[in-house]
Length: 117
Length: 111
Image (tube, rainbow over all chains, first blue to last red):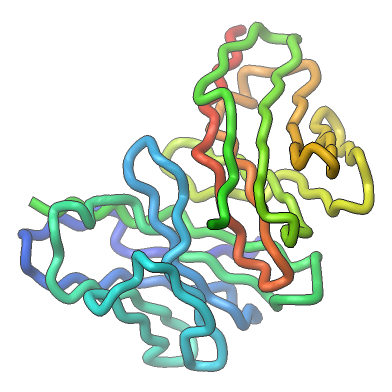
């Protein structure tokens, strides 16, 4: 079964550094998402991406964050200047379509654990 | 404010017992209610979902009960097994299909 893959599985960085989290969505999916999960807390929506542009974002997704689909397969999340509170598990997800179809669930990757020291 | 409240935070059940996890929502525009299952080290995976035009949906040992007037829905796991031990998230979404997740319930099923 096709799956969403994320790399690296664990990233340690120093406060103020830039990090790029990488994701390869399922190949025929058109909608891409980033969520994060702070340890022991709920899964929080960051941003959704369709047709090479952000379609929706949450208040968490401030100017420190950016997303990009640099080629036909990768989908990246960049954090420009990491803060301690950015430490979390970051999940990429993709779905085949959005909106009127209920038969298009989100497929999540296994996550990247980001630790900011 | 879109919010989904989930309880309990943790749940311990004996093998063969019934696990019940409850969720409540506020936004009446929500029209899709999925449950996700997450094993350690893995991302959430869709387990079962319901639309508000039905009051119950059953898939194997997993059942969603939905009460539209009370804005509540729950997951029932019948004949709970140790392999069901995981974190369960309820979620809700509008037609934009970006789900808002609850805080999660850590389920432990003792053999």
